[in-house]
Length: 303
View 1 (cartoon, rainbow, N blue to C red):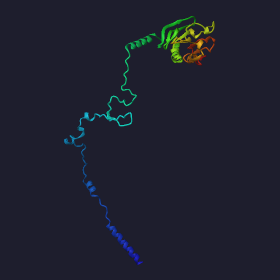
View 2 (view 1 turned 90 degrees about the vertical axis):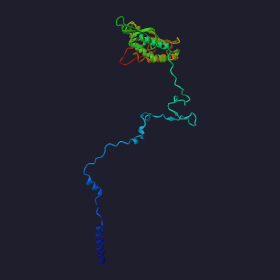
View 3 (view 1 turned 30 degrees about the horizontal axis):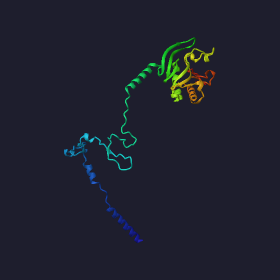
View 4 (view 1 turned 180 degrees about the vertical axis):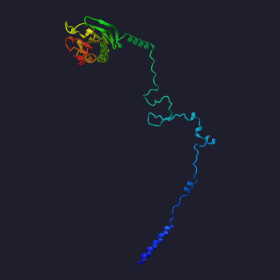
């Protein structure tokens, strides 16, 4: 028991001595000095000092701008056609950059200047087309007739006599109104010419068997007036090719390539025209196509 009290006393003495030996942290002299001596705001220079002339003499900016800013052409290596070593470096300013291709031309070909006579002839044709146009369309050639009088209700308010449409002649010329002339022009351009194609060298003319005529439908003695009575209809019996071949609705309908072309022409008319009648419509149209620009609420009538 005595030993316990002796040990306890020794521990108390040791801890007291240890507490006396510990050092209390002191304030840093530098911070104290900074606080005590800083009595006025710090004034620092805001603009850098100029460099000495001796240093500027060796600066890169001393090189003239004209030499410093101009780019230098980069050399490039052009591969050979066969596998192997490359050619010597060449500048990009080389004139022929495509010489390494066996199919490329050495130089681009300059287009041949058209002969003066050709230019003059083309201009004359253009002027003639503009001069001979009707209905405001150079593709429709003919002459303006104006008001075409007729018996009773027959007649055309603004009639034209059409000689050709899209380069295809009408034989004979047809007296119709501009609406019908425009439909005929679209049909020839978009249907008739592609349908004939190269048969006989292409289409040359249309064989017209009826245009403006003051009569009843199907030339009957009574009944309603035909669209022919108002210049809104045209009947076509066939075509003539550039080689002189005649293709007619009566003899070629349903026969070979010519018959197929006629059927395509008949089918393609349904749309530009309001009424399209062919050999299969009735006996009155077994030898020709009837096209007119009458309009119906149900759409085009095609038989």
